[in-house]
Image 1 (tube, rainbow, N blue to C red):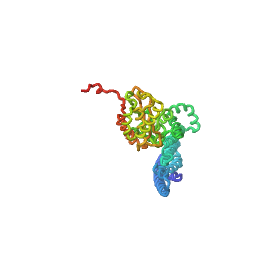
Image 2: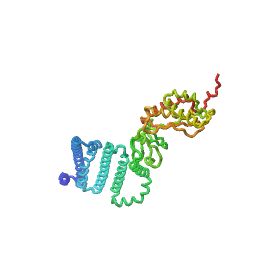
Image 3: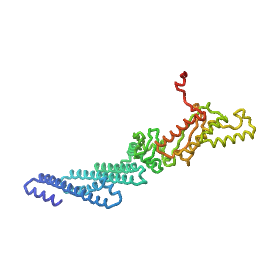
Image 4: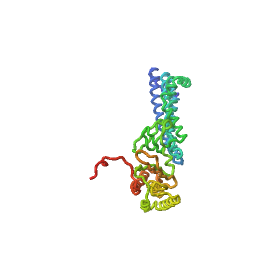
Length: 416
């Protein structure tokens, strides 16, 4: 290139052109020639690297090299060769224009910084895509870490670019930034909080991608589809998307249903409110009638015989029902519910099954059903729970009990 630049200049001088004209024409011709050479080299480099990388990717069993190609890493690396050639040859072409040479050098350095950032971003995107293919890392907040590294790379790139433009030594430039570090921290407060939160979320295994979470403060109730540096995206069950600040996962309280999904059942916990005035002792006639209910026949026979025997041994006066031991319609109904749940095919028998009476309220006596359905899928769970309470609501009248409900206008209409 050095001999070529002298040859063109000497040739133009020999043709009678002035030194100024020869110098400008020489620079223009050499610039056009350099651009053509750089274009050819860039095209050849991209084609060669693409062909080599495709060959290697086909021969390799790993998916990483395929992801490198899909994220354009070889194509971006191919631009390095023309850049180095341009950076080496421009001092020869613009030796007579020192100011222009300085700005072109700065422009090439800035382009080199941008090209490096492109390559780094492509490599980070490749790592992100590759980590998401690994079963152990698929539910981790990989996006957060990639974003942190990318932000750091952009910071370094911006600092280097400013140092190049201002023609300041990079270390002196970074020292000067210490004075405005507080402003930088204030500006990037959410980013810093998100980064710290994402590390804690991953380390403590608080949330994974795919977890069902309920976050009432932000109106989120659905599956986590993405965890990145600033936000967590939750797809609600109505298919809307709720975004939650990442740091809110460690600053506020929310419910993660992963434990339920990992367990052997999904909890059913619901109460029937029984009218207090409908609760009473059972007469011998009522007990005989209830013995026709097959689920409690054996229980009633055994229990009633023991009660009668104990009352007779203690010579209890049974002319008044309150004396001695007695069966109540609510107690027998409670036993019926437990037996019914024990025999229900959709209830997990290895987990707790309980029917309990809660403290009386203004709406009656809460009789709570506590058990676990074997099927944890939402639609099936709701069907199982509805099927159980359909049966209980329909069977409660057989025990001479009533469910409490507030009176409606129809209750005050006189019957004809």
